[in-house]
Length: 158
Image (cartoon, rainbow, N blue to C red; front, top):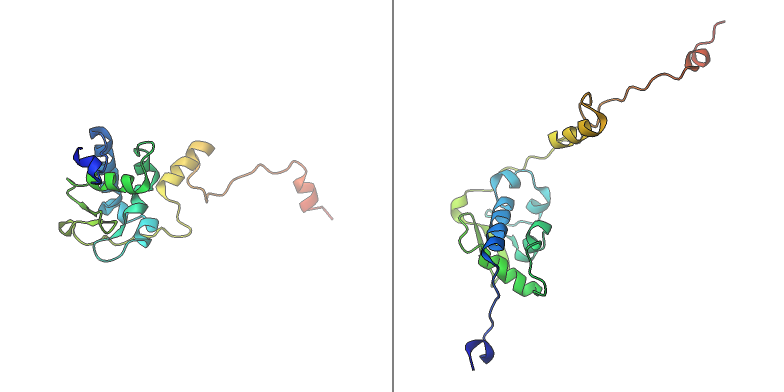
């Protein structure tokens, strides 16, 4: 009987390409650039190192795209934790089921919230793409041509 048959729990591993992709994506999520604007993730982090559930990150679409078919949630979280073993910025605690920034990564960046009336640059570019180059933002007034009979109804001569 070999060791796996004696009841020892083994965690399947990802291939090198999938492991590298998971590492790169999770490091992006924990980067200063992303954490400065990601209200969703920041709202689920605790402490000064940004600790959050491993299950949360392993369920994100860009990470779970690499999940092997048939892997249970526990196995998948173990694979994600294993992929992060060599990370320079993120550490995984599979026993606690958490991820956090490594102590040397520095404090969490200040969250920059976008204003209610402010159009993010990406949104403005998308609006310009759909409405033409003259569109400045989604909040730009649309200039409609006047109705041909509008002047007769608005200002009748007396």
